[in-house]
Amino acid sequence: MKEKELSPIHKTIAGVQFLFVAFGSTVLVPLLIGIDPSVALLTSGVGTLIFHAITKGKVPIFLGSSFAFIAPIIKAAELYGLPGALFGIIGVGLVYGIMSLLIRLRGVGFIARLFPPIVVGPVIMLIGLSLAGTGVDMAKSNWLLAIIALLTTVIVSLFGKGILRLIPIFSGIIIGYIASIFFGEVDFQPVLDAEWFALPAFVRPEVCWDAIIFMIPVAIAPVIEHIGDVYAINEVTGKDFVQDPGLHRTMLGDGLACIASSIFGGPPVTTYSEVTGAISLTKIADPSVIRIAALFGILFSVLGKVSALLKTIPEAVLGGIMLLLFGTIASVGVNTLVKNKIDFSNTRNLVIASLILTIGIGGATLTIGNITIGGIGLAALVGVILNLIIPNNVK
Image 1: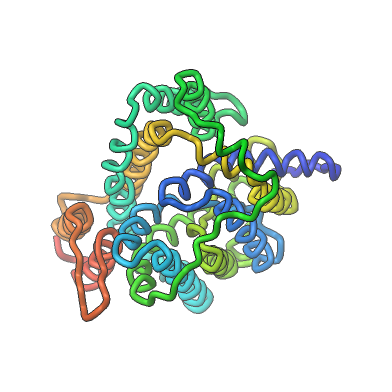
Image 2: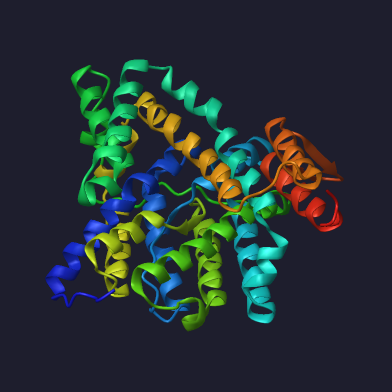
């Protein structure tokens, strides 16, 4: 792809536009797990800058809040409290660090053998399916608002043109919010009372080693997603970032960004394919533009009225969008199996996928001493172990 030469003003405008593309998803995750969305804007901005420092400023990737960890964080918060759950995100960063080292020593093929599609597909399905009940519970608080937000998101996804098609979640929030105002469901008093400039309402993480162990297996799917996103940006830009600066560097950058998020009490971050789509559409692949987007994310995080406004979004509006989003995540898992032509007449594949799904959906937990692993994390761990111990020649 031939890159456009941009003036500083045009770079700034493009940077704001890219942040706009990532904004809806980035602030949605903290709203669902119960932390200040401004914290997520801060950690996304800081995490992106860390990623660019590790990758020598060469890779045009933006990091935003990860949907993969919504259910695990909610469950971990029940077990260890929200401060303990946020500390557990360090475990995600450690997994990325270990994967980075393995890629450096053994190559990308090793990761593919350790986490094949028969494991990754069902785990991604679990991420979406485990949250379906949460989406319905939120939506039923006001079905009319939920349906308005849902229909807007669907229509923009199907029929949106240009940059609009890249922001279906943001569009759903905006239209749903306007409808909420019309029906008198929004109280603006907190916005009026908020300061223009204010630090985010940080939740101070508390040391909890059990939470780290709880989170480690959940990182399997995001690791594979990271690799896919790096290959995607390769395709869009016509460059080979797997070789230069190297996939091990992009993986390490993502991991250190997750650790930084934990320190600030924010959700884990991940590579955002929405922004990659925006790069493909605008033909702007200059990494400095992504860093400008990150800086604006940090700036918005200290605007107290922005945080207060985001907190006034009715639960039903978020729930309506979740009905589509969580189903979409599950569908990505199904597509992983279909795209890789996984044969379910093969008993080995059937056993692995079945146990991952039943253990995850059933909410199974395993307690050894003071350590508890459950839900998606336990299901992912079982899937990896089964894949390693069941011979490939079993039909």
